[in-house]
Length: 92
Image (tube, rainbow, N blue to C red; front, side, top):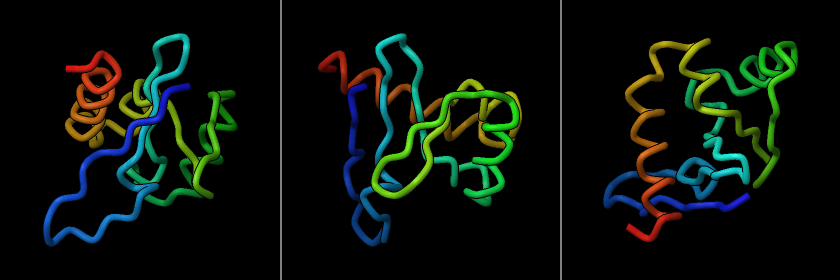
């Protein structure tokens, strides 16, 4: 699992866990469950669906593909996260 921390924008108060995402060895991107709303509810839904969950920095991270499917409103932000993570890991 390769972790990527997005750069901190001026005037935006986002903690490290909120700006972090990961690329798994099998190519899945994991983003903070809180992107979809209530972190605990998203975590429980992911566990119910037998989706892998990663706990890091005291927070839950779930696969972006699953999040997009279950929470379609996250499409834009998840696509951006995927792009940033894959680009950072590839060295772009």
